[in-house]
Length: 153
Image (cartoon, rainbow, N blue to C red; front, side, top):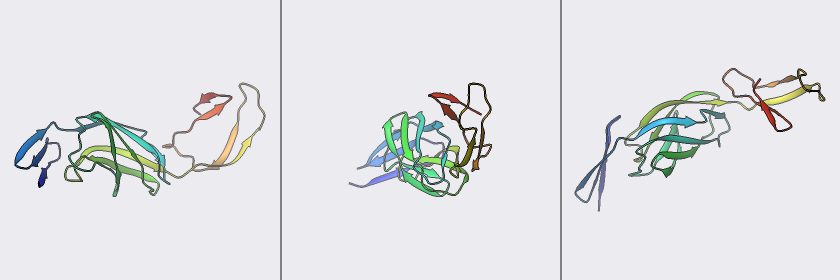
């Protein structure tokens, strides 16, 4: 049995197996969370959309790097980010071994944050805290937690 997969950007997927032609609804990426992660890789990314059905191996593309994707439901896919240089890359998805590419989201890789100093070490509610370190930037999601309560600086 041979299989032919035909795909075009933005078009429905066409699966031809043993002379039977099957036209599948056009898949679409609607959301990706998170949209950033550490450059060492390993960030679990959840992709939400519609009509996710693999007719080959599903792949996530982060710029020029590709990693295996896992279809959780027909509306949800998961993949882990590869190791990358810090910066913003184009994210795309394939459900058919790379024959058809969908999605035009962006993913930002950032260098890990390294803390050097936190002053003062003991504070009372409402006090200012100074945090010194490396890797802070405007595109990096930063959140502090004190006693189980989270704050965004």
